Amino acid sequence: MSREGGGRESVVDACALAQRAGVRPGMPAGEARAALGSSGVRTIPDDPEALAGVLLRLAVFMQRFSPVVAIDSRDGLLLDITGCARLFGGEDRILARAGRALRRLGLASRIAIAPTFACAQGVARYARSAGIVAEGGQRDALAPLPIAALGVDEQIAAGLGEVGVDRIGQLMALPRSSLPARFGEELLWRLDCAMGDAIETIEPVRSEPSPEAEMIFDGPTTRTDAIAAAVRTLLDRLAGAMRARGLGARRLRLTLLRVGVSPFQIEASFGRPSRDPVHLWSILGPSLERAHLGHGVEGVRIVAERFGRLGHEQAGESHAIGEDPKAVAELVDTLCARLGRHGVLRILPAESHLPERAARLAPAADAPPRGPVAAMADALRPTLLLDRPEPAAVVSLTPDGPVMHVSWRGGSARVTACSGPERISPVWWDAKARAETRDYFRVRDGSGRWLWLCRAVESGRWFVHGVWA
Picture 1 (cartoon, rainbow, N blue to C red):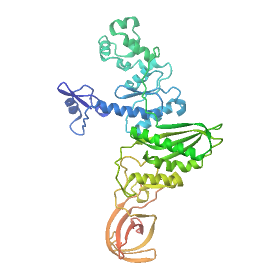
Picture 2: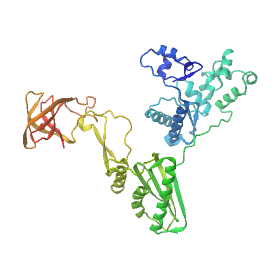
Picture 3: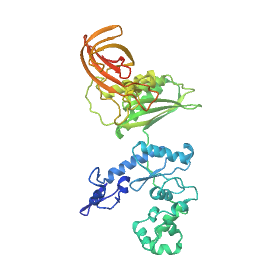
Picture 4: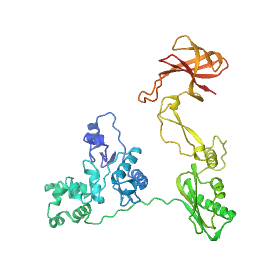
């Protein structure tokens, strides 16, 4: 990452590979490119606003590990995990889970847990290997680290370096009374924060509250029509609040506040963010009719527990149901409400080159996976793939094709067109697969039907594996 200023382009930050090659922040960009060589060097312009936005979204993401998350400089986060570690099974497990979560996002990270924020900052940024600092272990953890690990100004660190004080351990050995006059009060304050002798506060990120709407009645009621009217009114309010924020609900929780007993809750999930009150009611309404009202309901609350971005829609456009993503999503939501979430499935590509493993079934209400899938999704495959290849009798000019005649399921036909072979090898790393190398042919019989034939290379047997409908 580079920035132009003062008539030159300089390095702002560098990846680990570039740092191992000697690239450092502040270095001229031309010198950095020369150190890395001409091939494979990618320079990204520094964009502080975009980086701050990414860090803010990452801070909200990390609130799954702690409700108190603050942004630290331009590339770090601070989490107050007091009382949170036991929910994850200990500090070592929360550290491991946080690392895995960041790796799934494609981010490299260094994570440290310490009794103080300043100590955790220094260990994460400057220690040879980050980890967990036990209570009272700040001195031993920080002693071998450079002065910069305290987060002090660069001029202070440079001034200490001029008198031979390069490490925090050397600093702690000096008389405290002699330091403020020459290096200022900030140095001792940062040292005390790291040791736990001074209070350090952080400004946590405030995530947007979930959209919600609530109505409290003048008294309890068991009239289902009155409760339904209240729910529909709240859905209109909720839709307006989500429209103002450019959001749509992915999961709603309807809570009926009952007299003398615990609240009754109804959940509804949506395959696509939605803020259409009519559609939201069509999913919640049937469940509300079956709700147990107890001795009466005195209030109703609706919360959008999960939501996603939903842009403004152009009015007046009409589509066929198969062409309109919104109509398809609403149909899926309605079917899921009646048949259950696992009763409505969709086919998704899977990471396998074997035809029978190249697809999987998943709940249609789930969001489709993002990013490319390493599968044969773009290969020419039949519309109907048989569960198991069925034996067939084939006449071919040579063992490797082309196919001239095929007999299958008691019928016999002459082949009028043949293309192939396409060789598919077995999964050699999976001993349970027990598959042979196959040569696939796409053939057309006399009636115009296209078949997908395969020949097991080792045994020479022929099979029909699919049909184009």
